[in-house]
Image 1: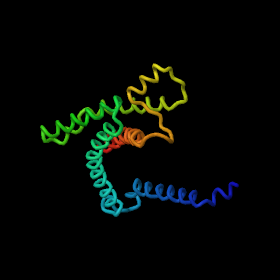
Image 2: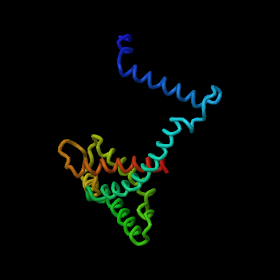
Image 3: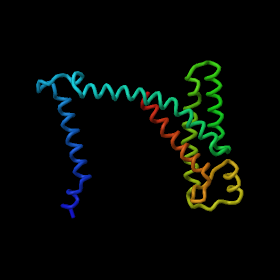
Image 4: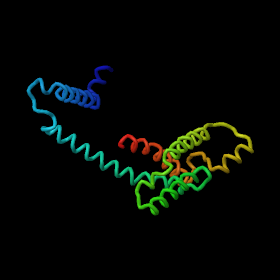
Length: 177
């Protein structure tokens, strides 16, 4: 069984990739000792320059995409729980239009990111198989929480997916900036 595991192509590809990364890292660290030219003058340096330029394009793309995702979260499943995203989008668009500054779209993003985490947590807790009293069930339905199942509406699924996408893409934007 162990012999068959090592003959698996995915394991071999993984090991070869890891060994190549190790060789490149060692050459990059100790390249000057071996009489190699500095990395910025090699194809590796050009590759890193391309990756840096690609990172700047990803920053611009995420800056343009994140307000759209925020608006989708606010309008895909209208409820009290998605209202802050809609209001935040409206404030950002009005600020952008009044000041002609693209940074107006980023208003309230820290607060909305915290609220998105809270909303994801509440949706997750609501998915658990717990019996709720009729009064608590009415409150949960009133604020707009929903259970995701095979009979869910597409707006509910789209809202929850866009909420998770907003939450995770905010981290990507913060890491790129």
